[in-house]
Amino acid sequence: MPGNLLNVPTVALVGVAHIHTPGFIDAMNQRGITVSVIWDHDAEKAARSAEKLAGSTVVSAEELLAAEVDGYVVCTETNIHEEWVAKLAAKGKPLFVEKPLGFAGADAVKMADAIEAAGVAFQTGYFSRSIPEIRQIKALVDAGAFGTITRVRGSNCHSGALGRWFDTDWRWMADPKVAGVGAFGDLGTHSLDVLLWIFGPAEAVTGQLSNGTEAYDGCDETGEAIIRFKSGVIGTLAAAWDDVSNPVSYLVSGTKGHAAIIDGKLVLSGLEAPEVAPVSGGFGAYLDYLEGKPAELVTAREAAERSVTMEAIYTGAKENRWVTL
Picture 1 (cartoon, rainbow, N blue to C red):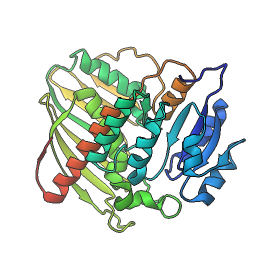
Picture 2 (picture 1 turned 60 degrees about the vertical axis):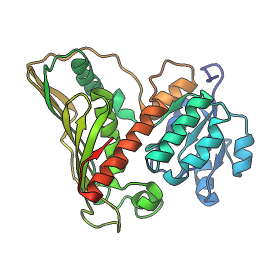
Picture 3 (picture 1 turned 90 degrees about the vertical axis):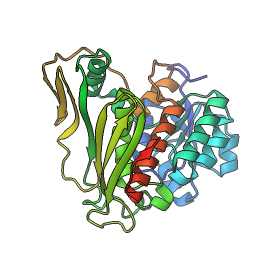
């Protein structure tokens, strides 16, 4: 059972490799959540994280699996997600696995199977679902307010390669042999989640990827994809570590109206903005769940679908063709 405000949750931190780990540590400290045990194959990195968490102990993998906790937070390199998820799901406790769930499609599906078979609560880092402007667009789409939707676009870009964010502790994230993807998969998975969440599953995809500034050998830094949804909607997806800004993050055009999120603000034409209830997303939603609060969680099957779709985009880019899902 998840914890509650009277029974403060205790979690195990499984790996500290992901660039979001420091932010997650801060979030748990702010809520007073106890991280009792930490494991990473790099014990020195684990120790540095333990210093920021009162009462935390760096342990072996075996000791972590034996620890009594209320939930797990997995921030390992992507290529060892499957190994850990198989073991952790069997423990029957809520599970947060940082995105993307899978190194590729097959391991993501196996993890979703294991999580569903164990019946444990799951969450991943798709925080964009909680953004009010995105929720307003989804409400309009669900209500049919756009009429026939003629085109959609998602864009998620930052300056990670320009700023050399992945030169030191996070270098593995720019190595597709460990991360499974480069910039396009790392950032694009957030916007892909939003597009699939709003418009449904993809029928076929293709894309083009580039090494961009060539800051990281063998790693895509920027790319574009085209998605044909099973609903008939056609969309595009952009993601990059090579941009100084990302002013237009989403766009939906229909025969009755138009919506865009520009510099974080919802701009509508022919439509009225609906009221939406505030919710937590991503890691915050997982912590809400552990504390016994209402929480909207991403399913493991949804997370696996994103990995399958992203792998198909990479295949389409590599082989210069459309890939049917």
